[in-house]
Image (tube, rainbow, N blue to C red; front, side, top):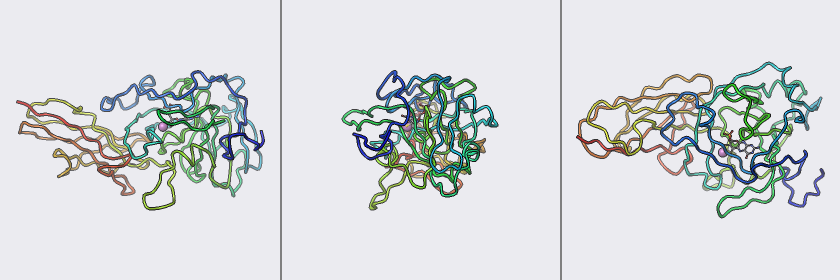
Length: 349
Ligand SMILES: Nc1nc2c(c(=O)[nH]1)N[C@H]1C(S)=C(S)[C@@H](COP(=O)(O)O)O[C@H]1N2
Ligand SMILES: [Mo]
């Protein structure tokens, strides 16, 4: 298709592949795992959240292919079977939805930790002779439609399009994934193939991949420039929702627990784009903080933390956890996507 699009000048609005059936069409959100119930290190697939802005396209792997276009010496189209020529790559990684793009400062803590398998995107880019002038990799999904949330509706989107800095793709294990926890992807998780960008918010991991474009500039698309592009207070510039900020959740004790005076283990998960170096816990609503024990990071997984709390007095307590990563970034107390998690509990006799 050419750029005589009826819907505007954003690249994401131009259709470049036949329309699959959308079933269902429209926003799909499934959050089967309540915060504070995430005790398993690897989240079972049936407990993994689902986020699809436009719906779920139904695709046959036999007829599916994706195109490499743009700044390549040797652009090409690859079918499902062609992926077998690349070395398989397994990535164990936390997977986090950035939350509602219309409320970027509201913490949602939609987090899981799963195993993906596929092939390294950089191997494919190199085979297609990516040009040195490439700065961004654009990924197109086959899904289309309008993004409708309560009291909000986007213009018609002819693809879900995201972009990634090429340096990130070349220096991290960004994969085209075909498997989740050892099984082929289900339709809602991106069958036949999707991007997985470990360390980046889930919004960047484009499902139902149909095109990889090498470009010298950011994609001027709805989900790259309009949504998931944070306003910086007091500035005209915006920050794309790419690298995951440090975050932690208290899994135990759960909100509303009633405990007896005793030794209480406060435990949970911490994660960030880079390894989490320390987690502090507060048992007095954030007045004082103590260091928790943090397990080292495995691959790109979340890390367990624990703090042994000796509680002698009855009453109501507010427990908080705060993660700091290797880059020295730490969680703010309020007003951000990664604000600290607070859990209210009561100690009774
Ligand atoms: N094509 C496409 N890819 C997409 C989306 C989408 O709407 N369309 N949603 C993104 C968002 S916001 C998230 S959080 C993850 C969710 O992946 P999951 O549903 O497999 O957990 O997919 C991302 N990839
Ligand atoms: Mo998301």
